[in-house]
Length: 322
Image (cartoon, rainbow, N blue to C red):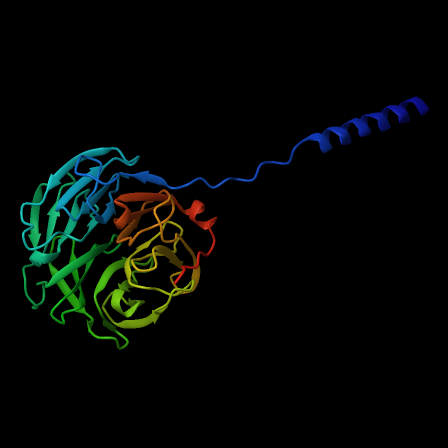
């Protein structure tokens, strides 16, 4: 019995020694974002990228200030490049992906939307210049409600700041919002996103806030306001719903991305002014995909940065220096 007890104590001592020598599991290390593109005119390069949209297959399309569109694979390899024929009056600013794999481009200075293939072929034109229903002054961005088959388009100019609603065939349905700073009014609405319940979130850029409407256009509320502290906004230029159910807002003047719950509660922000990985210079647009990525059109740095949601969460809240 004594021998058996001694063996038991010896085995326990050996096990304890091995346990103490075993290093603890390594903590996950957040790597930097994936960088796509650089400054230039060649395929895969940009002249101030602006609008960006992810297609259902994970590939994405970017339009830039040189009146070009580029289609990239999901891993950032350039697939095709084309030039917009009409650009003497200005260049397209925004776009969205359609469920059929095509894109809808806001041909901003021509007062119209272009339904196109990812290779640049024009399939249809929606709207024409004007203030009437179904017409546009300067359309800036669009978003699709994939559940109901609706498309929301934000526009500004000539005191015509509003949201217009279409079906997927280009039939006009409704318009809401007017120019101003009162609740329910808009000042240069620059981005739009659709929540999980169909709620419409508008990046109300020159009011430095997010304005919220129901699918019929009834005003519900606003959240955030002008400032540089976490949870405040300075020229929110675009907004997108992430796969985690949060809203991602890109701030042109704060050089960052702010994250909110759909209720409007601030969650975090990431990014800071600069030219390094994870920093931004007047980012213009962003989009999200179904695999937990946020793609940011980092305009002043002539590139696209691709973050994963878990990675962005590790950065914490990043105040912006005045």
